Length: 283
Picture 1: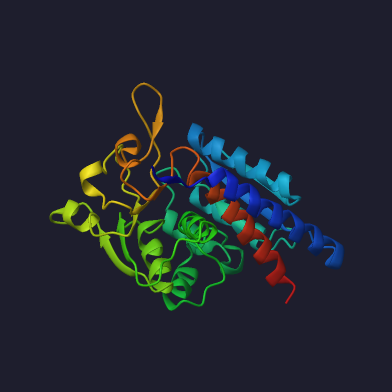
Picture 2: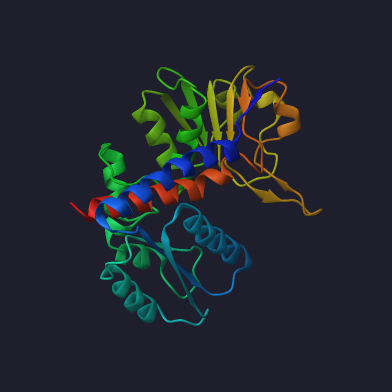
């Protein structure tokens, strides 16, 4: 039976370290790391994410502001509010909760965030730094995956790593991070021919394709490490990942459950990025 990679356990461990570092920073410099989260509109899932981020900041002793704006907010009004946050010394990290209402350009909004406060690591200058391997911040979900692999002492160097999904938020940066640790990386996507042949070659399989139970037992090499980034809600209300957990668990060497795997790591890395932004603001 596969080792279950416990994101809740790893997240709790990392948050304890972050809390200690936040306390030390306050005592040494008087600076409290500050995170601003902007929510435009009334998407229920986004509202839950924002609440969770606010609660996580409290948990580790960070200052946080939640800025809510109605769905009919103009792009200009949002950009003005962002400029205020860029200039606010209490705020070290800024996150705009996506998706935004259709009349607002996500690209323009992300470009307007000061890269030194871009704790999601979506700004093009931060994306470029990740490409070069000399980054300040890493995107929260791919970095969370790496934290899990490190915590469980799963070797990456020389391993065949297959990433299923090529989004800017997960797939592409995930491939770069695995490559940065000397993994041999293949990116697969919806146009990949004979996907199962590619996934069966993976020592480490990271799946972020957004399709419930898409990866089945016959697509996984025995003993592989399977990291399921997906989170989907089935018609009966249950949550599931992109991997058929019940079928794949007996074959895999290690596997993340959904929920409780990668999910808890995303906000934890966000906290880590906000702390780093506060530390760098003092230099």
